[in-house]
Each structure stands twice: as structure tokens, then as C-alpha cells.
Length: 441
Image (cartoon, rainbow, N blue to C red):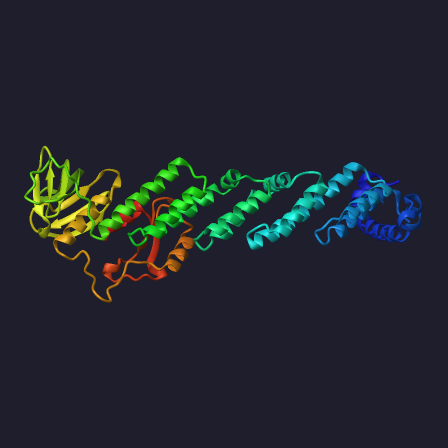
């Protein structure tokens, strides 16, 4: 009799088991119900030391044949039970072999489902059959499968559905149906894809902000996604705040400015309309013999339809829109260059871009250039297919700081300076990096 170590290092043992299993399989197929293990082992010349591995190999081959069509009939179940008993295989070995085959078949069916992005009726029936044979549920098999494969399946379905940057109602219902067929509730399915759904919504939001305007379709899409996904309250507030901000910015870009009915800081002229009133910090650079100094004053800025008025305890002034030479976005605010008073930087709390937009629109309306468009002039609108490629290129992150929120599509060379909408001239930046870049141009 060979010792265990001899068996382990025996180079011929694997071949003996393979030959013995083939012979035993042949005898089993020929004798069927007349099969007797002891007689068959003697006829096949199987070494008693190899018997357990040989019988296990035969049973495993029978299981493989039974599952070849990914179906298992009641007759096949009874046949496998009979094979296990006549080969005198222990229940523990049978359970382990069945479990290994079950995992393999289950993974194959899930792989097929990943390819088409859903679990159809046929795949659902097969998964149920696998679970029944294993004496468990589809949900339990999926949970075990996810422990090993990192819950990638449902996320794979979600990724496939959103890879084009869109997710319509039918695709979402198919995802939920697939999750339900795997035993997951809507809430559980949402939880599994939460990081991906958040990034998807951020992608859609960045798309909506790309041209500086929010269409009715874009707004409806964003709120539909918020209703579909189980997102954190903080993220939902972020999206709804951005939508509200974009709604106002869209109206402003179209020349519809807000009108305040109460403004106690300024004595208004007859018929004068107030479009903005808020806190601001005014900074102005002055050249001295000792070098450049920055004068700073915190106060209140009022923007009307004809002028801007800044008041503080240390500095107050006003100047008409007609004297403004340029308005440029800057970090946390706007840079104004005027022919008289008012030249300098105006910053606003919370990096608010609304005052700058109102100011620019008020100047445009005053100059009667807000809605003017020169035929053939370049457009800032970035085609959707380019936005999709840029999003994929940067992985949904800021090109500068890798932030994943408050993202915006940015022209590397501004359109106003001849920049195009080509892939090579568009990047993904967060709002702060975008403003920092604008401040340098």
C-alpha cells in the first residue's frame, strides 16, 4: 500500500484516475441497473487507493452531462441520485460536487445575461432550476455569487444600460425586473448601484450645464432620475439646487431678469428696476512706489437695469452699465473693467455665479446686444457625442483635481478666442478649477 506522500507525488496517478474513470463510466453505461461497484472495480483494474477519486470523477462527469443543455429534468435528478448511491460516494462529496457545478452553471447563465443586459424569461427559468437542484433560492445563490464577484453582475447590467449616457424608462424597468428575478427588492437594487447611479446623474447634470442653459427635457430627465434612484439626501439637494440655479441662469441668458420689489440700500430713480442685491467683497489693485497693494471692502452690491451701486462703511460708489468695458468670470466672482469707477474684482459668498450672470445680462440689455447673434458666429454648444467621449476620457472626474461633483464641460481655448468644439479642445473641469482657469485667461 502506498503512503499518502507517495500518492501525492506519483506522476502517473492522474493518468490512472482518468483511465479508471473512463472504464468505470463504460461499465456503468452498459450494465445500468445491473451495475455492481465491486465487480466493476475489479473488471476495470482500479487500484483501491485510487477508488475514491475515480468514483468522484465519474459522478462529476455524469453531472456535467446532465447540465450540458443548462437544464435538469426530474429524471436526470433521480439518475444522478442513483449514480451517487451505486458508486458509494459520501453525501459530503456529492454536496461539494453539486455545489461546484451549481456555481459554474449559475455563473454561465449570469454571464449570458450580462451580455444582453437583462434576465429574460428563459434565463430566469434556468436560474430557478439551478437553485431548486441546489436546495436553495436564486436570491441565496446570487448573494453567494456576489460575495465572490463583488456584486458586479447588477452593476454590469446598470453600466451597460447607461454606457451611452442615457437611461430611459424601459431600460430602468428591465434593470429592476432583472434584480427582482434575482430576489432583490427595488431598494436593494438601488443600493447595489448607488455609486454608479450617483455618477450617472452627475454626468447628466454636467451635460445639461454644458451650454449654460437648462431645457425642459433636461430638467424632466434629471428629476425622473432622482425619483428612480435611491440617492442620499445631500446629493439630491445638490442636484435640485443646481437645477434651480440653472433654471434661473437659463432665464437670465434669455434676457428674463429677476426684479426685486424691495431695495432699501439705494435711492432708485424713476422707473429704475433692481435685478440683484447681495453681499459682496470689492477688491482693487493699486500701484504704489512700494509695489502693488490691494484695497478691499466688504459691502452690498445692487445691480439695476442701468447701473451698479456698491455701498460699505469704508467705500461707496456707483457707475453706469454703459461705462463697463468688459465682464470676466473670476474665482468666486467677477472682474469688471470700466472706463471710470468700479474697475476691480467682486466676489460673492458660496462661489455664487448668479450675480455675474445678472450683471452681464443687465449690461447686454442696456447695450441692446443680449439677444443679438451674428450669422455664422461660433457657438459654445458642445455636441452630445463629443460630451460623451470627453466624459469617458476623464472618467467623470475633473481633469485638474479629480473632483467628481460640480463638473462642467470647458473649452480649453475659449470660443471667443477661436476655440472649436472638437474633442481636442474640450475638457472636464469642476466649477472651481474652471473659474481658476478663466481667471488666468
